[in-house]
Amino acid sequence: MKVVILCGGKGTRLREETEYRPKPMVPIGGMPILWHIMKIYAHHGHTEFILCLGYKGDIIKAFFRNYHWATSDVTLELGRTKSVAFHDQPDELNWKVTLAETGEESMTAFRVKQIEKHLGDDDTFLLTYGDGVGDIDITASIDLHHKYSRTATLTGVHPPGRFGELGIGADATVTHFNEKPQSEGGYINGGFMVCDRKLFRHLDGNPGMMLEREPMNALVRGKELTVYRHNGFWQPMDTYQEFMLLNGMWARGNAPWKVWP
Image (cartoon, rainbow, N blue to C red; front, side, top):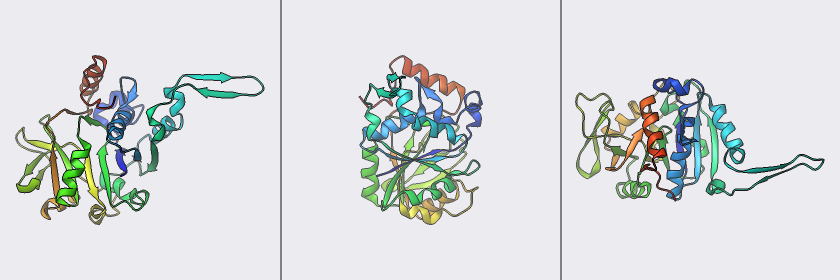
């Protein structure tokens, strides 16, 4: 099952870092938050990734092109017969990464629409944002998705109060998707979604369409959106304060999203 990660936004609320690089490349403990997200999925056995690039996508391409140089000790022979030896064999050697250009100004629905061609024959794919981490049980979310066989399942997490709130009804259906709630509490969309290809019926060729608006609300109206309730750790990195929070947790060895060995 392939993992689609939205990596194209400009991250304007984290301008201290994103002026120079895309938000998925902002580091936690020396490695991009994107790497942390991919490690979460790889821990659950999902190592084929499709990255939806946009703003400063060349920096993400360069990171993966030079991955061994960035993560390994290297010995070079500079004589007439030049050679390079990488001393480490990271777990990421079995990753397959597709870097898809989806437009610098595109919104989330249009980015997802453009990567359909990279899914091959897969009927189901995983989808998340490139700026949030958590100790999500990916396998359990997939099991719930298959149990109800709806178009999409998103992970509901407990919020900082500034996020849109989910209404949850019987059989884990989403009853409303309120982008700007009037009160705090409940669950919000934390990403880490499981989607069937039926989702593409709700995505058109409009570069300005946001996945979180018309498509999500269409799924709600059709009772085609399930929520997997996650009561553990989840944290986005939207602001400099959140950047400092996540880096502080990593430095102290208290990073709940580090589910891999």
